[in-house]
Figure 1 (tube, one colour):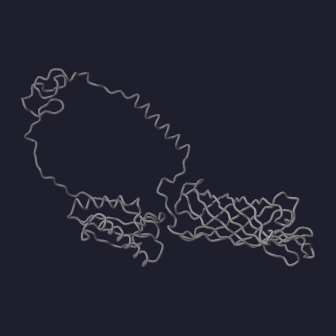
Figure 2 (cartoon, one colour):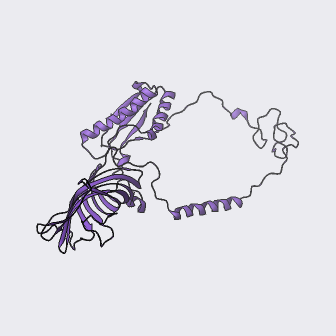
Figure 3 (tube, one colour):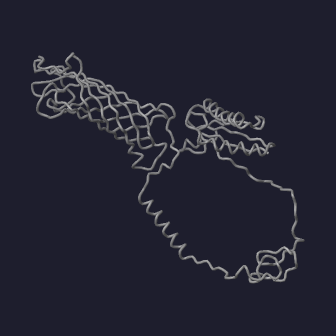
Length: 385
């Protein structure tokens, strides 16, 4: 909900009052739906309706207005500052195009009608509009933001106030306080490197590469000029020019220098003994309030399945975790659902015996990161010998 401002022929020195002796409030309601393209850019469809009043000298007007527009948004907070997934404040600027509908009545100081602006059938007239604006929002919860928006719309008309002449085109501005609700996966954490590109960083890397190339050019490799096709007196495949022992016994096992190796010190065994090796698998991470395994996390589940297939005598413990927000009961349920989701993939997709899998819900009892909530929404794996 917000307030309309008018700038035109009948723009008053104070846009708060108008409409003759009674005084009226230029109210407006606004609603929009949008989508983030990535962390820096977004698009939305915006619509508003309301009343507009203004007076100047001996005339005043009222207008019934509404509009719809498509706006392209730029998140200046993410562009100017390093990307922070959990930040509270966001500043967006936008520009867009739309259609503006209006029906206006012009009055004199005695509240007598001077002029009515409407379509030929008595409805609203329409004009195109160009919008620019800024939105400042504050994060209240994972899904809800409080927003303050200031915008201006340039109209391709001169009769919004019922008076033609003077100012070439009329201008409408809005100041609105509202609530933004994030539908679906809230606070999406983008998978790619979110650090803004910096020319200074690129230049540093180029200089580093140039220094490495110069270093390689200064490196000389000394090659033994020995001709490997020369005489090999003991036939041990090491030419005499490199052979420390050019008269090794026939059939002797030699090293790269032609020196005989004492075979009595070599012990052969077909048994491979492996013990005390720590097997570690990366966690599987989840979106907020979600237990579906993302495509980007399926590789970890696949590696775990291969390991279990190759080691049929082992068991794996899947431990589920959740963030610190929400009740203990809800987070225990969510962390168990995350365990079950991974177990289902192992059993149904990879044919792992369900008796080799144990699950444990930890809820929010093992918070690793106080300020990085996405690191707490995970399942861990422990191999049980």
